[in-house]
Image (tube, rainbow, N blue to C red):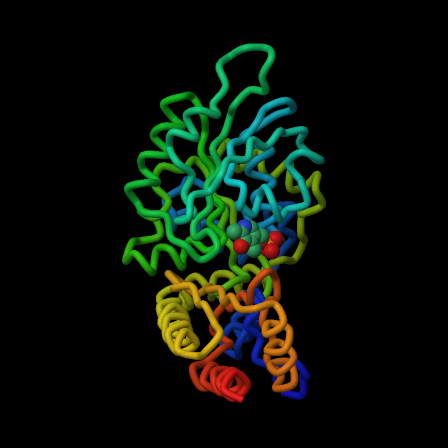
Length: 341
Ligand SMILES: *Cc1c(COP(=O)(O)O)cnc(C)c1O
C-alpha cells in the first residue's frame, strides 16, 4: 500500500493496528441498519456474541474504551457517589476526568502495588461508612491487564467479593482483558467472573479499527444505552465497524499469544544490550529505562529508521499484529548498532 505509515514499525501502542484484508472484507460485507433504532443487524450480532462470550446478559457497542468505561461509571454511580480506583488506572488518569466532569462522581484513587493490584486492606480502608460527611462508596473499578501486568484470578475473586460484601458494585476496565485471559489460559468468561460490568477494547491488540463493548445485565445495559445517546455515542449504520469487532473476537484472540511471545523475545534481547534496564513483559507491553541523554539519542536513531516507540520517563514498547518478528529483529539491530557504537 502507498500509505506512508505502512513503512513504519510503530511500537507506541497496539491501538495502531489496522484492519487486514479479511477484516476489511467482513466490514464491506456487513448488513447495515440504523443502530439508534436498534436495527443494525451487524451491531446486534456483535453485542449478542460478546454478551455470550463474556458471560453477561447484554452488551453495548461504543465508539471508544473511554466512552464505555464512562458509561459503566455513570450507570453504577450517581451525583455525589464515589468509585474506588487505582492511582494508575486508565479511568482515573487517562480519561480526562470524565466521571467527575460529566457524572459528578468522585474518584477515590488508591495506590497500585508493583504488580498492578490494589491491596485488599487499602480497598477496605477506603470504603466509607454511611455518614453524610462522606461521598457514598458505590463501586470498585479494577483494570486487567494494567500496564501490561496480569491480575491473578485469586486476587480478583477476593477483591470483588470484598466489594460486594460491603455493598459496592464492581466494574472491570478490560481494555486488554483478552491479553490477560490468553496469558492465563482462561476462557474470556472466567477471566471476568466477579464483575458486574466489563468494558473490552476491540481496537487494541484485537486489531479492529474502532470500538469497545460494555457488558452487563439487561437493565444495566438499558441505562448505559441512554447515557451513550446523551454522550453522542449513538451511531447509525455502525455495522461495518461492528463487523470488524466481530471478526476480531472470532479470529484475533488466540493469536495474542504471539504478541506476548514477541514481547518476551524482544525484551530478552534488549536486556543484553549495554545501558538498558528492561522490564519483564507479562503480556504485550514492557518498558525500557536508560539515562535520559541516551534515551533521546536512541529515540532519534529509531526515528531515523522509521521506528516509533512511546517516550515518557522510559521507553514503552507494545507488540501487536502489525509488528511481526522480522520487524522487531530490525528494531533490535538498530538499538544494538547504536548502543555498541
Ligand atoms: C486504551 C484504554 C482505554 C480507552 O480506550 P480508548 O478506545 O482509547 O478510549 C481504557 N482503558 C485501558 C486500560 C486502555 O488501555
